Length: 614
Image: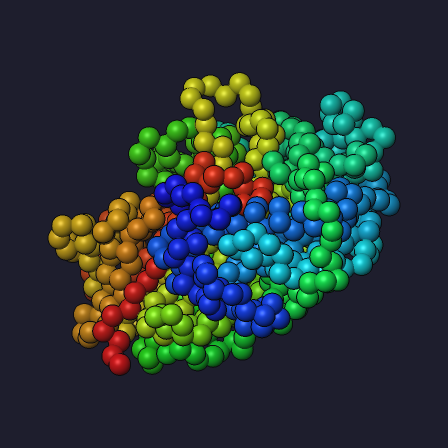
């Protein structure tokens, strides 16, 4: 996200966001607010097009922290939250200038079982969930609800291989000292195929995470284990992390002097349907909004399949004509400890030798497969036509380890070191716009030192880029035809017709157009927001939509050889051929104004359909 936040007329609200949000019910300056119940009932979830330019990103970056502070100012909320040992946050902006916020956490963890049995039963004690609706322009509570405490339990089990890897941690004297006298449990949910470490390619190193309860906090020992010899794993590095985020909710609560009187029982409760889809009902995600596998809406015909190895797979038609044969969230590489970028493309920055060896300290390679825990599908959100833009809908999925169903109990109970947590969504509008969105939803591990990120204090050279995301979306584009496609690139001055596969770093004002050689249909992809694009021939052997969902992870050689879609640009002819368009969206934690442990942020692209008729 580019651009600085402007000072707002209301404390804590960016002026641009206050000025340009387009959804309202007459609660502007000098006007009376509507009845609170009517305001809540009439509120709706907002899309990217409900905000001017980049204010959708600004709201997600800025508002969650402000909404949490407002929630914690209430003494009843503060009393509950300050007693937690960990936390989980849900946030969504609504219309009528409302923020929907939820926080939850337990007061303690207990553990039964142990390494000898390979089975750990963990219980989050007295876990409570708090919901609030916050006036976005006044930082005032509009609705409030605190659920009763409950105990929530789950089981961690591992096989002989996982046991050997954990034992390498337990044999380390520093780890033994760290665990002494504490309840602890392992998290065996990541794997070598999604981990790269220093100068070794992904496939060589795995992560072992041990949670330990220490008084009023939960801490982590995070170890890197060399697994090149499966029968003899070796611990090569370990880090001890005390704080998972810069601003844990429980610490924020302890630092705030709350208001004198609570609004609990005075304000309305938060209706079920107005809560964030994450941490929505009984402290879990909402799943009841999942649509039929095939449906038509707002001129679009959509078919979708649940995630197998590449996220949810979509096939799309518009006004009865094909748009894409398949669309997938292919991977989300997350790089830590990169050197300064200095204008390099994401390929040359992440993989300067053009091979699967990362250029920083370590990289996690989320491939959105069910065995690695996600993404789950949260469902479809409908947008009515309003304020000058057409109706539409969002299909929202999410990813974090353990995301399927209620198997993510541990994550929602605050044990959220290791698993990622973000939304992967697609917005479809009646005027032929399609907006793929990657939105990071926390927790984020920005703490006081780079070492807690797993980046050494003695890093040589300039200050590294602590954390950088890439999100890879791939489309088998079919602009009105399932035969060959014409591909053109507008470089800001003129249209060019590349004859062969290409990788292009986008700049504002540039775009790529895919068109039907025998018709009027076209798909434009503006190359704004640092968007990069790779256009290659459709080949079954490449990692991509042309490769079977069911064989991707099983074909481990192809998986480990994959590092960036630009590797597939081998010079093959593309004109009048079926092509795959890879969108490389970026998100840098160095660009957010608040540490990401309490802020969300957004990367997005846009596809614009033309010539599809009335």
